Image 1 (cartoon, rainbow, N blue to C red):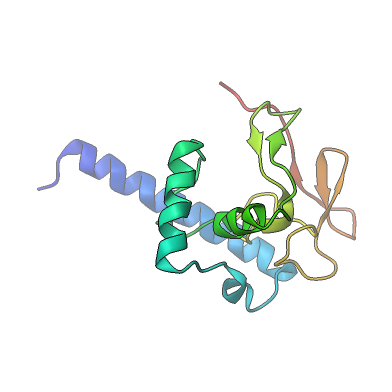
Image 2: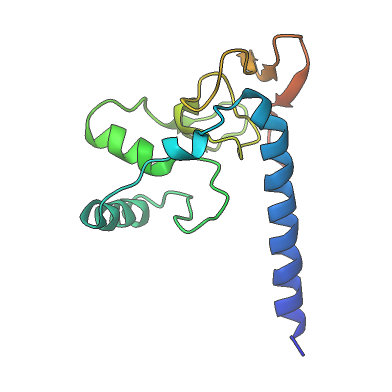
Length: 145
C-alpha cells in the first residue's frame, strides 16, 4: 500500500496533467496542428550543454516534463545563435519571464507571439491576453505569495 506522501504526489501529478490538458484543449484553436514537430530537439552533446545551462542559470524548467509549456531548448538554441529576445522580469508578477516566442499550447498565456500560434491567436492588450472577438483568456496579475 502506498504511503501518504506517495498518494499526495500522485494526486498532484494528476491535477497537473488535467490542468495541462485543459490548457491544451483551449489553446489548440490557435495552435499549428503539428506544433509538437516545432519543438526543438538537440543532439546529445548540445542536450548536455543545455542541461548545464539550466543548472548554472537556475532556469525554472524541467527537461523531462511530458507537458512542456515552453520550448526552452528553442530559446537556448536561439540564445546561442544570438537571436533570442531577452528574458526579463515581468513588472506585474515580479518573476522571471521568457519571451512568448517559445510558448507551447500547454502555456496559460499562449499568444500570437508564439512560433507555434496560428493567425487569430490571442494577443496582448496591456496585461490582458485577448482573442480577436474580445474574450479575455488570461490576465497577468501579481502572484500570491
